Length: 218
Image (cartoon, one colour):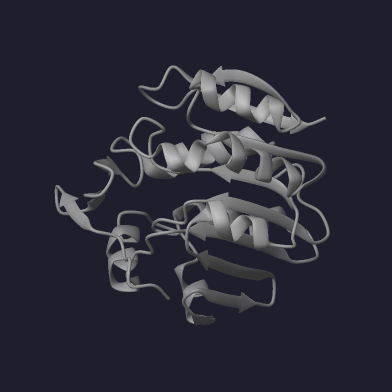
């Protein structure tokens, strides 16, 4: 763990907002639908699920993206194991995670009973949250993801998680034919992902966001 935990305030008593980055952890409209649109649909999931599939993520937050992905994995009925590796600099205390996740029904929250933060493992999944600055920790990771969820706070407020060097590392840690998706359509982010080896397209965003980005490793 780290002494640098998330500094939160709560909007309407149920939506966590980062004080550090002045940004909510998920959509104020519908966080569940946002995750499905941006990260599942953006990476062509669950259609691509098979065997041992590896998702990489920048920004673990409340764990919502992981739980939505695990639910989709189980609904797809595929064999093998879902591997999910997330990089988080400011982890949220488990009590706050549980409070935030109460806003959503039907998620496999019991997955967090299979271990202790930051490592969880069950019969059909393995979750590892790597704590620290992703600009350093990702360079030390020896894995490769089949799909990336780029879910840091807004590039305007959290530019450290969207820099050229980090996007280059994303490319180096992507399996052949792997994909990435993010809610942002910021030009400098898309250009950095292209330089990292992805073919990037701008597509319809979720809710009030006009556009998002998705890509496939060339």
